[in-house]
Image (spheres, one colour):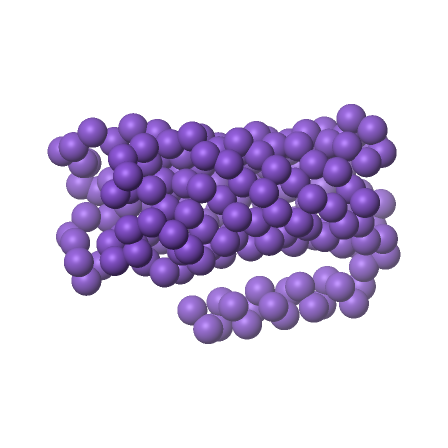
Length: 176
């Protein structure tokens, strides 16, 4: 885990040193998340509606390519109280611009568990994230993202079940 954090830190620092144009901003969104269990859960597993908010920096590498780094709080997991999981997350997305309005990105996301049934969940998780963004004006945008857990979010010492978190996120933001 230390090597992953070191690598992510190195990517951010390297990107910052080559940035041609940097924009900052804030973003908020609606989450629709669920847990995928292996083996399949024998109990009710309904999706959870939650929210996310945070700040970001978009480091422009060229006219059509940038690296987006973000720090966000996100309410995820499933509907049942014992399956809720809230995180501080750091997505890093490589993004391609298509014209002046559309951007698509993909990358990794590191999540730190902050609230909920702390005894049953892993403290850190790793996910893949992809998303699209549409600029309404030069400052305002809307976006849609999906992230899929690549690691088990449940504490392996406490259960034989494995679960990955899948979240769809619909957001809006402002670049300042």
